[in-house]
Image (cartoon, rainbow, N blue to C red; front, top):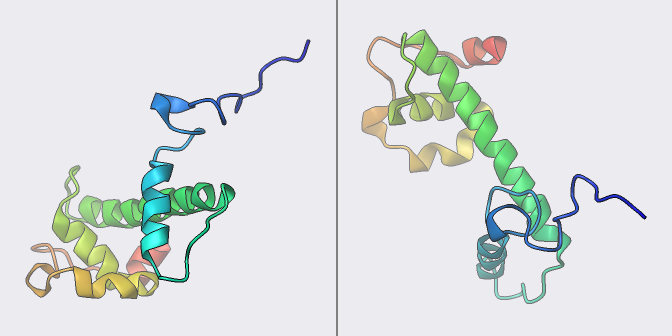
Length: 121
C-alpha cells in the first residue's frame, strides 16, 4: 500500500481547513484576482496557489529588509517606520511608495541608503 506523502492533505483540507500547506487563504486570493478586471471570469486551481506562494515570498523579503533597519536602530521590534524606510531604500518596492506616508519616512537616528540594505541582505 502506498504511504501518504508530505502534501497528502493538499486536496482534503490541509492546514486549518485550507487547501494545501499554504498560510494565506486561497479563496481570498481568488476573490482578489476576480476583482482585478472585468475580463477575469475563470481562474484555474493552480493560479491562487502560485499567487499565495508569491505573496509569502514578498512578505518575507519586505520583513527581512525592515528587520535590517530595525537592527540598525538597535531594536528588536518592527515598527511602521522600519517598513517605510525599507520601501524607500529599495528600488524593488517603488510601487509601494505612495502607500507609505511622507511623515514617517525615516526612523529617528536611522539613515539607511539603498546600498546599505542591499549589502546587508
